[in-house]
View 1: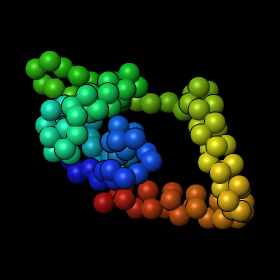
View 2 (view 1 turned 90 degrees about the vertical axis):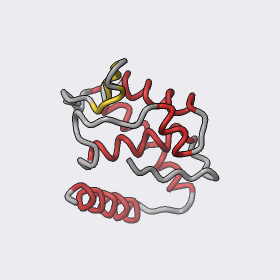
View 3 (view 1 turned 60 degrees about the vertical axis):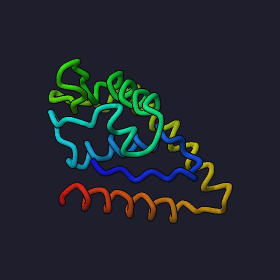
View 4 (view 1 turned 90 degrees about the horizontal axis):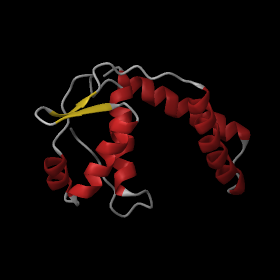
Amino acid sequence: MLLTIAFESDIPLYQQIKNQIITGIAQGKLKPGESLPSVRQLAADIGINFHTVNKVYQQLKQENRVVIHRKSGVIINPDLKLQADEAYRESLTETLEVLFAEAHLRGGTREESQQFIERIYHTFLQEGSK
């Protein structure tokens, strides 16, 4: 599993790792039933504290994205079936409101926001088909 970590970023390390794992699952780069590196191995590969990786794996477990077994380690949930329920939609709305507010404060227009969304969505679909 290849992760790109920006140590100088304002985004916390655990969030960068979590975001990349979720994106990998969504794009099909990480398949249901596929093993992830152990907590200690991933921490050593990245050069970070293993507690940071453990935090990511525990959050992904709570979100039902991974399953953790004592013997087989951390695997992408083989029965992963996430639904866009009301709670998800509310969370998505809150996240997007903050992003659009920030864009507005920086002089962004509705058209620019729509172009960003289209470009990101298009790139996401292209990456997922590789």
